[in-house]
Length: 82
Image 1: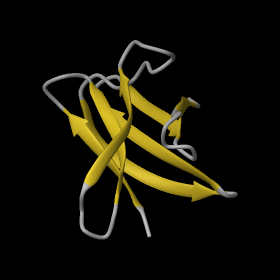
Image 2: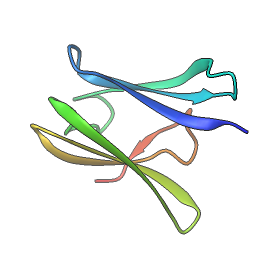
Image 3: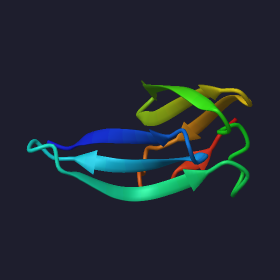
Image 4: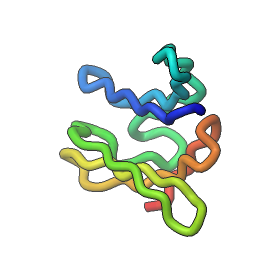
């Protein structure tokens, strides 16, 4: 079984989304950064929550710029929702 892992980089403005196998080896599958491709509220991010709604998986990122909701149903292709 694979678990989803989101790593925040507070010194740089961005995230890495990866999968973790049972042996806890993390393999990055996508990276997102504030100000690129519709991701507008990642600057100063300090909190992450994951929610599954109607079969889709979302990451809710909070920080200095506000709240960014990201559809991470396909971890390799994260999509900003709000």
